Image (cartoon, rainbow, N blue to C red):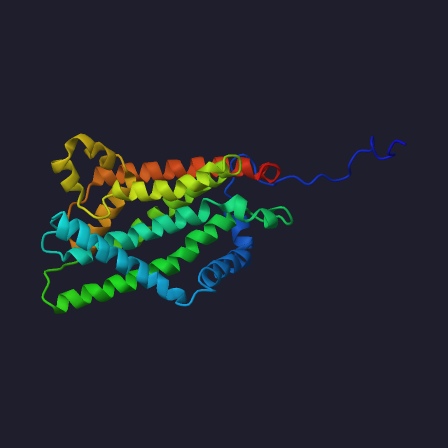
Amino acid sequence: MNNVNDNKDWLFEITPKNKFFSLNFKEIWQYRDLLFLFVKRDVITVYKQTVLGPLWYLIQPLFTSVTFTIIFNNVAGINTGTVPPFLFNLAGITVWNYFTACLTGTSDTFKANASIFGKVYFPRIITPLSVVISNLLKFGIQFIIFITFYILYCFKGASLALSPLVLFFPVLIAVMGVLGLGLGMLISSMVTKYRDFSYLVTFGIQLLMYLSAVMYPMELIKNKIPAFGWLVEYNPLAYIIETSRYMLLNVGEISILGLSYTLIVTIAIFFIGLLIFNRTEKSFIDTV
């Protein structure tokens, strides 16, 4: 028996509202309550069933800084000038952690939220955007720890000074967040078809950290291993880390050319990630 509705036209057809490229700020603002709800969810649920809870925000950068100080400064003999090695490492790790949190949190967007995306419409970019915003809280807590040790070392007589450019430090963090968001959207789109990318992210981040001048000055790699110096020079993250230490500790150097290159790469990656994210949004539910 044939279905009488086989040849009947549909009255309405629900399709994704986003075009191939779309960044509707007005629509995002209309869904701001949902955005804040996702931010609250991300903050509360991360360490909800742990014993130490938010204390992990403090433990991770402190232990990592101590480990880097022992291995790279005490054993390998990397010189940090007048800045205490622990504080030098803590500055780099604090900024680096914000990038990694943004990247790992957004790189699994479609897979982690498939059940929500398949039931109700809202601007999909709200989900990775909420990760970037919620991680600002984690960064703020870790930055307070850095300030605490900064003041402590000042009382101990360490030769420390803030650069006048420290006023632009929030801009630097914003660039780091946008870069993490762009890469995260790009990877999350690929994960819907190629699950291997979700496993490569963790390994890739660990490798990328060593190429981002987190635990050493950029000048060091250029002088000691010039053959591989280009790997760091063409890494936009390295300029962000180096500039952040220059702003906070007044050590190293600031490269206007390097920062310009970083800004161009960040904008390009963000728009490419957004293009692919919008395209994947229309068909990911069939492959995730």
